Amino acid sequence: MKKSLKPRWFALYFSSFIYLGLASAVIGPSLLRLVENTGSTVSSLSIIFPIRSAAYLVGSWLAGKLYDRSGGHQLLTGSLVVLGITLGLIPIISEPMSLIWILLVMGLAMSLIDVGGNVLLIRVQSTNLGPAMNALHFFYGLGSFIAPIILASALELSDGLQWGYWGLALFSLPILAQLIFLPSPERLDLQTSNNSEHSLGESPNLKLLIVVIALFFFSFVGVELGFGDWISTYAIRMGIADERTAVFMASAYWGAFTISRLISIPLSNRFQPEKLVFANLLGSFIGLGLILVFPGHSIMVWCGAIILGFSLASLFPTMFTLSDTLIPMTGKITSWFLISGSLGSMFVPWLIGRNVESSGPRVIIQVLFLLLIVSGLMFFLLSRLQKKTPTGKPAGVMV
Image (tube, rainbow, N blue to C red; front, side):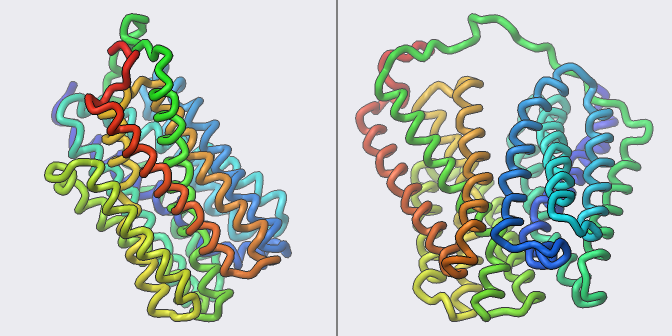
């Protein structure tokens, strides 16, 4: 491992994740303009959310195999190029089906960057990985925060999406420039021994724990992405914000999300994961509850969005930490949780889109609040099951 190259590797992967965050957060705030550009409806065009998530899911599964067989930078280069091209094409597409295909390709490219950033960072920083990994995902949140601001500025200057999306597309160029003459980090030796696999046994508690945690991931990730994708549309349709202000509202949500991820790094060293999960859920109920109870009050919606973003941010890594104290986190079980979260991000925005025009914008918050209740119920069940397995690992599990 060439230590002199480590700063360049870190800069490349961190900036790639800023770009990934930019691309992830730009579609929701521009949804109504995309509907207008394609002559479609919100209900029919909402299919872009599950399409993008499905492509992301398939791409993530393929990416793991591809990165294991390559140095990595070739895949990262190709993915960045494809993502830049798709971002440049989105604002000039006038056919709904063409937009759907573009977003499908975009989802595949994003998944390759996501998996690649994590895999390649592990190759660079094989020991003391925690700080580097948390920083990587902080930069993703930073990109998600910046994207709506760039979009709002473009709308103010040109009253169109083109320059905002084209600016994001051009952002890929300085990242690609870093790849010139930069070799990939050395691949780690793959461990294929069957002896390394945990035997999961036949414990009914284990099976129930897996189902409960998977449902928790499905519901809270659905709330996280569903709110980010639909808050701008909600604010506009409720008449509490114009288009530019609604975009900034989405940015405030992702900004709180980003700050919270930064703060959660030291907090995770001081508090037990179950206490952090409980505090995050409580904050999420307060934030989303403010919007549910005061739907027409702009200040309450702003406060609710910020509180919700701050509360949801650290649930994903904290829940993984808590899960590791309860069950053996084999690769198979880990993949189930990741797939559950991906299914939530795919299904919930689509479900909202299918009902928002017929039931009105309030259905957005109602659906999300019901899902948050599911998260709370799953955490309650998890706490009860944890009391039945005080040692953390369920009976019948060989580790």
